[in-house]
Length: 292
Image (cartoon, rainbow, N blue to C red; front, side):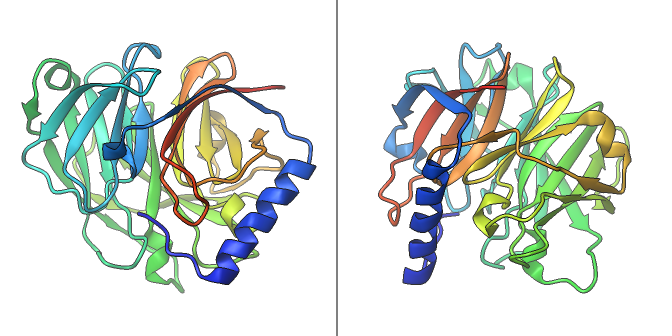
């Protein structure tokens, strides 16, 4: 969802961007391409062929379409999910064997309490231009006291037959937490309880607002992205109710409305950012290397 910033909010964004440049950075941009205008509100990205091409979606209010693009941001295919409405698509993920999943769980401006996950056959996605998917109605068991914007979920990844969904924290400038919900794909229940809570450490709020997630099979780590940072979460930590991430895995030298992340191995990632008028940035796809 495109953000509407006040003048103060915009000034804070620019100030934070300046501070990021002053600090030591460890992310190198290998390739940068402007996305087609139709993908101005890109909000998720995956690859089904080890980075040869990518699938991306737009967030709320756009058509229910999945776009296949190449590394030069050229659109290869458009696939319509004909039994879906894009209320607020925010991320997509895959089990790499049978299904792709879309999280229609965004709630950036408190407009909806209806959440869903769409399950799509990979075989349909790669062979047809118009497909249907299974719609899974989702409800969340909230943490109390709660504001509705606790349930703005903009990140999701698949790990060991389960979908992990991460909230984008709007509630506090200090606590900097993301609530994690878990959907077991082998159990037919759409009511999700709180699985764990991630403490991201003290950062300016835009730095810890999680907007995308991916799982890397090679390292068995989850990677989360925000406007300035990549966070690393080993799979084994998902067994804990309370998780603390002590330091960022990667920090960018610039601020932007980053929305999605896809691991392509060996500390390399493909990331998309949404168009942002206040920051005068176009929708873009990056290939980056995290220098360890």
